[in-house]
Image: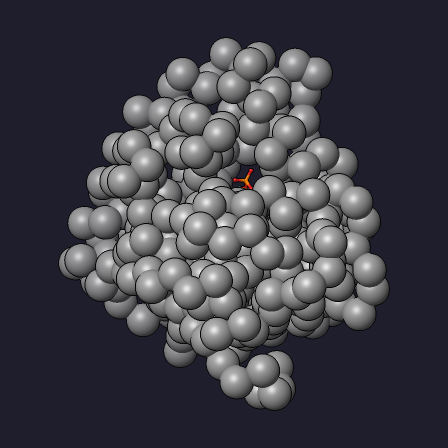
Length: 325
Ligand code: DP6
């Protein structure tokens, strides 16, 4: 095959990945667990080409040199595995609204890994594809399998992602700020490891929370899943804020959403907040409560258009002409 197209969706971690044990192999300091969303897919086509070097088009524009360099570095891994040196033309289309605060690197590298592996003739199962996607962006590993996925810490062979059984869940995305984040998560992770005195505590605390989370998922205990989600997110922001110079991703608007979510719980509506490396907040709830959570976010926290997401599919190959929904 000389051309392949893949679709992948973003994921939001319930137990966060923050910090690498190995930068080159993109091995995480701890395991993590996420829900892949059924909204905001990325579609990527990889075509082996006769040109002198790789090319990259993102949402209809030519990529910057920096963006291209990261993709070429990833394709080099694929080419090495395939024993093929030919360059490729990569065309990627992302449906995440600009500034929605959802990591496009997760869906982006999951789609790229899936399409590139097929184009270069690698026959990888979900486990090995998730290990490959991990090398592009850690969180992309979790967008390879569908639904709720655990990404294991460990060495190169052991650090893969797989789907775990979980009760029905929904997420409501509250965009509070569409601006660029002040510092990339990759850079912020480095600073956290180098300077935050709380980082050594983050590792065992997250490992313990992950174990409890896996048990809560297996037991179908949505309340416990939610409690662990919110506490792990706040711990991640605490360890980040402990960096020197400090990094603060959460803003006053983010805090208002956390307050609104606490208010929902006080009124018997089960909702739990989490946030990645940015000010936007994602609210975990039961599917049957998602509409009420969205309406309350608008009424109480002024969120204009909350987006409701259910668990989404893993990355998959498509006919290049299939439209993005
Ligand atoms: C806060 O996967 O984007 O979203 O591996 O350096 O590409 P790199 O980092 P990335 O980091 C995601 C951090 C997070 C938490 C999470 O998704 O688990």
